Length: 92
Image (cartoon, rainbow, N blue to C red; front, side):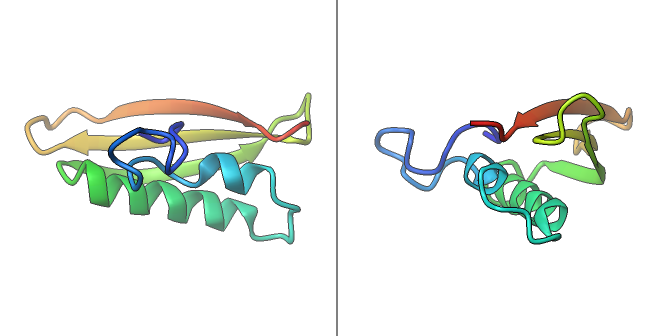
């Protein structure tokens, strides 16, 4: 879901997120907020059974064009917290 670009999935043009578009935008200081907003929006629309507890976004020390994203979440059927990590590379 998160790494699928909206419009990429045939027959379902709204499925996906704007993460790939956001990561290639010039950073006006609000890119972390845009990333978090895109994740929360996509997840609430397509996976409402997932409850996001926290989203941590950091810039890679090795590559300033890369954002590391950690999503901590629970599902409606589990009390155990799980996590997903993404590496978003905005370098051309």
